[in-house]
Length: 473
Ligand code: TYD
Ligand code: MG
Image (cartoon, rainbow, N blue to C red; front, side, top):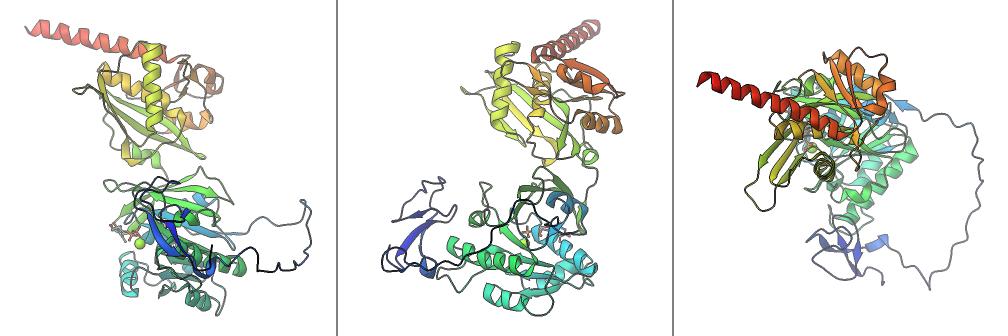
């Protein structure tokens, strides 16, 4: 390719094409391929450029005296839980999320907490003027925190400024899409610019030992737009999620070179900023509909913390040729699987019914252990029989209809007990782990036996209703 020849780059995933096309073949996004000059970023390779003579370097043994990565607490316990104990020196993090979800709020709170603890924290906004950032800080009651502010977009200027004085402990760049670097000729916001700017900022982090947090906006399909190409360059990718209708916000690690990726941090957005939620189960169960058919409480685990949530299902006769399956907060493929198992092994006919499934509170569950709670909620809605309000459910369902054991059983049971539940429905194979619990345990081997139990209750309920009607008439 000739130097400075135009290239066509997908703004979503960074794939490069020789000519324009409507759909990116790499990620499937339409209208995302735009012309960009690769500029000085792609020096000519090949004949005509003599190979540089390499410099020899020393190789190290695997065993050595490297200390554990030194960490600095962010001052927000839920944030530390997700990063694995605080910010690592010289690391770069990407915090992604929908616009308006609260990324700037979270990070100004973290910067203020760190600054108040006596560390140098710098907040650089490329989106908002200083007055706007100050206004938010005032609203959050953080005006007195010694955070250093700037409204800048040139990464060369930023790095030159950061190089002066003491090395900052934390630098927040909000957002990476607004940054631009001189080394690249494309316009700000393009993939090449975002990548180039991130490279400069990450290099600064590695060289100086400061922790650099890049903020990135997410597109509609949930991928970090443009900055998706930054994901592999940073040490950790955190995603800040939640939906507009709820106050809960979840911070989740998608990638973490220095810690776990299965921990979540739970926050509540209030008039005074983000509040940590130390006991999320209580929050997620606070608006429960007790005794309504179609709801089951799932005793889940996120990382090392138990999390009880309500699963809601609605099964209704369909008026369409193809029944609808709508899911919020769970994997649609997993729902299809549970429905298929119910049909094939448990005699439950759902092919003429619409199925709606919702995880209460706007939480997104990843665990297969929720299979049993989902199946219970579905059957409960279908036969119109409420499940016992004081019971929790967990267990993975296999394609053969067997209920399989899951991990971390004792902490699920402990949490359920703490929150006043008295019964647990769980896999037969997990019975050995239930010796210590005070909960009444119903151990089931196959999904069919659970369905039979719930259907029997439904039939009993129908008989009672019929009897009452007879007495009235
Ligand atoms: P913001 O942090 O600006 O979001 P992002 O940086 O992810 O785009 O948060 C914006 C939303 O948060 C806005 O809709 C108002 C709300 N908010 C509160 O409810 N309480 C608060 O104290 C603050 C600062 C914001
Ligand atoms: Mg913002």
